[in-house]
Length: 312
Ligand SMILES: [Zn+2]
Image 1 (spheres, rainbow, N blue to C red):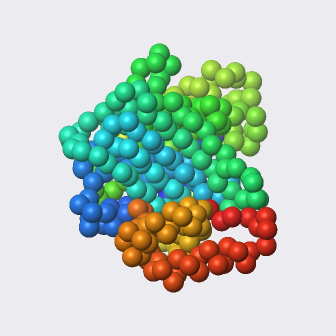
Image 2 (cartoon, protein in one colour):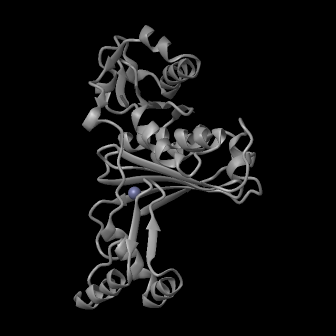
Image 3 (cartoon, protein in one colour):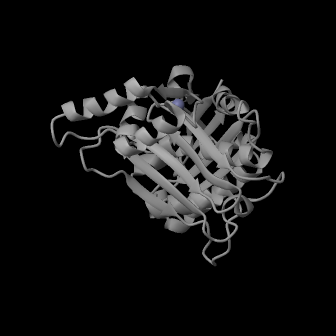
């Protein structure tokens, strides 16, 4: 079963989270099987994105969806992982052409330096006209080198957005998508440090960095080594409280989207195909609108009071 674990290191200004997506991840992949499935390297990237997005969502207090999205200029044109505050998640990727096994990130999404990664926070009860918050994350390091791991991209983002040193380890295959996040907490708030014995508040940032660095290095070596540290482990989130696949698509959302396209566009599809059929890339659901359904879409719109918020 998919699980999210949170833990803190007693006496150290370090917290961590571990996510293991098993059934949730297999659900996502299975829904893609009909369309031929993903190449292995894309499976790995999308799995890492799903794990990273789950960790980021669990790490913030925000009532809305967190969407991690890469628009690529390589074989992966688009990859999206979206996680709700209750850890319901979905993910999809659009792939063009062949992808060799084991290729690094830039070969997938940043071949011609045009790849873009964005993290969007979309408030649940968005007011009319209110835009989601979006942060664009460079796919390049400090020396303009192409980043070859998604974890490095996200670490940059966390440092910029939260001003917190973060170490991320991500891995995925066609069975499991997993991620480990280790974060150094700000030193103010001595409650973090109670029980450390030494008068840590007199130590400067260097001491804190050493703690953080040691744990972060351990993280990259082997998770099991943590159990040599004094770890307080919280009840894991799993099942209905944990990460699981769920799609937020609905016929009403598709209808809103079609209204947004306008009568002319919808009528031209009807003339060509006799019906309008829209498939959800995330879950594979198909929504069909025959000419009568389509006509009703626009009747409903006329019934709405002017200025009512459009659902997106
Ligand atoms: Zn769907």
